[in-house]
Image 1: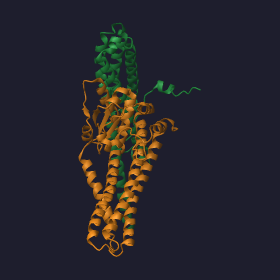
Image 2: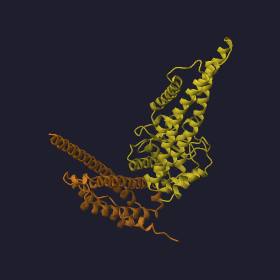
Image 3: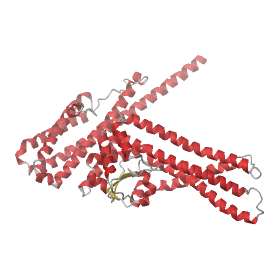
Image 4: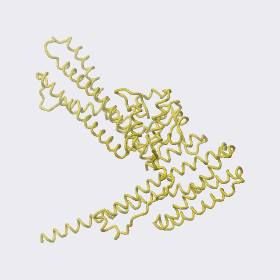
Length: 196
Length: 311
């Protein structure tokens, strides 16, 4: 009799525990999704700004056609990679790598345009250009900050899955570690070198 | 700078000071209760600690009243009452648009709701956050900051203000200010009681301890002590929160050069034209002038803390 009650209490406790873990994991997964959509909003904003930039620059930089075309093609590749991520319902280890590469290429080609623009004083003085430059660098920052927030959420989600006792149930509930959004930033790595 | 460690330390110290604050209130309430029983035993011998309770009730009530008054006004009210103008999205001025963009960026970095943005027509470099909740916060920046700081420095300043919002500092300092006001009210009550006591003693035979006089003196002494020590404690806590906000600014932007550069420019400038109607708000400003009651630590110490703390 007492053994039966004790067993029942233990089973109820285990179920309650499992429900708690289940709910926490679901909440964390939703936070990861939300953090991703914050990145997505900013990526989209950048894709929207680029045609305006090309239009503005065109009139001044007719000789630098190659640079402009590079930006346009980098943009469409980035959009394709982003859409592939969206189709998978969020970033996976497979879909996130092409996006990272495409975004890096896009950032590089945008940098080229702004570097070239330094040679065209009239373009630099153009108010639309100044505005676009501000908007693009702000969007750049927003992508970086949204990425930080996303990575923090991913770390929390992954850690929670790997902790005992959640590790026993996470797989069964359909939770798997999520890839972080990390940027290969060569310039940042090189800057760590210390000179004496 | 190791911002996590710096933040942990600043939080611990604040807890310590708040604890001292509460202990101080209770101590003075108890001490005056005993003093009254000792010196005016003929008149005051109730079994219940009436005086101590009254002291606590008066301080808490006055603090609560002031706190309620502050609470009615969102951060935008404070900014507007100082003569600031709200900045909206898609404004015509490029610099103002940049300010708005930076606030959006830091809001993203902190995952806080987007606050209202205000511009104050002062020439000195300064900024403050107002509003008691994360939802009704407002961040105000001076025209001087907009003109003289570069983008990274402005971002550092905005991130510092976001640090105050993030840590709930406006709430803490309003509560402390309300408590100090409560202490002051006890002192004031004692002074009024003294006047009353004098007036009355002229009518009586004037023999021995007048209970009103004794109560008045105890009110004055306990009010003065708590008010004085409370003011210093409040300033000390406020200074700790500044270090904390600096550490948060580095955390949010991952760029110690932004806020440090801004502080350097502030240290060099000569303008001091922040609205003084708002001296009640001085604790919220990015920088304020030093004294024992100063709400901010010396600027050089802040720069040193941001740059030199081994990370």
